Length: 224
Image (cartoon, rainbow, N blue to C red; front, side, top):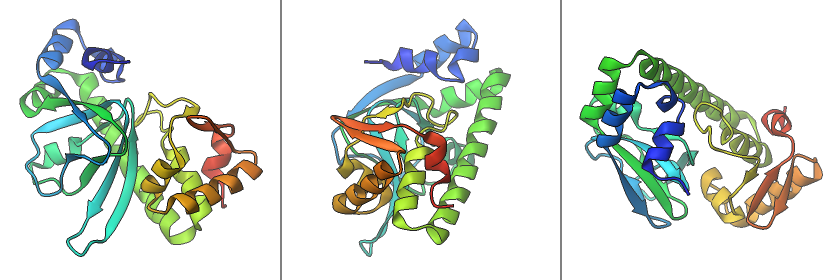
């Protein structure tokens, strides 16, 4: 099981840092653990950290006072998030909840900005990260408006394999049907129905402890 240092050193941006820069990053990063259902960060609070998932699974969502919830995306092990909120210096505009027991790395604001000031590779990574996130959300809007539930779940699974946003994901995705439902904003029963459709199409196989992705490109194209 990874610790903070292993996460930082294995991250795409961490692999490009000098040892001095890495030591600075490590000194400014701490770890916190969250139980299933706990908020890792909440909409409206000050943004003081950049965060990365060491181990576990998070859901980015927006919870309204009316009781409505909009699921935005999942964040799996190795994924970093919150850079946009740090750069804009405004209150957080979304919630992130732990779907299962999750360990998170918190890099403080001053360290984040120090890396921006001293590392060109770190800046290049941030540009790529923000570009990928923008593409992800544009795709989600398109999927929501044009695809049925089965296809949205297929695309949601495929999104967890983005090599920039979630480089630590492997083909045996450790996610339950209930957790998949949380990510997609549907019931466990509806997620189970969608998985059967995807299994019949030869794209995934449900296994003990997770979902084995057999055809990633097929998931990305499902519903076209």
